[in-house]
Length: 423
Image (cartoon, rainbow, N blue to C red; front, side, top):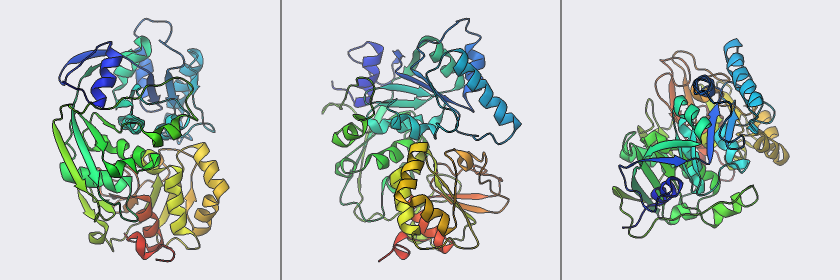
């Protein structure tokens, strides 16, 4: 019997020729990731292990990105714990403010995660790296602590669902719309503890930035991981960044799947997820005219250069609606600099938006855009749970950068074609 790409990566890292769904296995890890929210707990637990060094100073990555620049004394103390640990244990990949970025944009950019890798991170959106053909998943802080000491973690081999997308992708429809449409179909627990394997002619034509967006939100369907087999588009991205060897895996033709889902996307509109779940989706035409107070463009879901390019094309020569606030967060310093070189930052500022240093900020209700009672936000982030971005009686609608930027101009949820130049 054949294996899926996820089974193959797990088998390789467990030193096995074959693994099957449901098995409990122990695997060696290529990367262990933590941030300023989850790492302090992991560091505390690590120090209880009674070891005097980490398993590998180059395979642990620490990125203080959630509350940076430090928003208050408590967040400053959290970041200091991470900083002191990185210095004390010689962690090579520690990214301080000025060098850092949103972790799930930063690690691929720095060549720290590669095809065929097995990666755990004490952050649920670690599944982002599946866009490169890696098995990447979020864990708790105690698992991170054990991994920093041993370089290993245990896994229950997940079953896999294959998602096949075909047809011609309409204008203004991208990875965010595909994944929201999928979550709207199967629900927030439709892939619970399963590997979501994205494939088909549409996926093969997707840019790497759009692939990151899709893999990022696998967790919003309950997935253990999201994964896309590496191809020429992947290799073009990783070859100029990789600092070590990597291995490419593909699913066998006779691999067994829990289910196979197929989508003809030819008539798909941009998708909006209504409060308070990512599964509560509707096409943008059914969401039009909902007035919003704030628009957020960025995050580990949609803070990459292609996302900013789309937003800039929509805002060029226009003004943000006077009654709303627009916050734009480039995913990393390098993305920020590239956006600056291309003139996007000037476009955003001239339009009346605020551009922030890379940070998770408003996505988790941390800082840089908290909502008051009764306010509505339209956001390119990944979650819209009750109170996610501020007051429990605020609301968050999820969308793509194209919809977010168009809506920023109109002050209400708006289809991109109503604002796009020349449309």
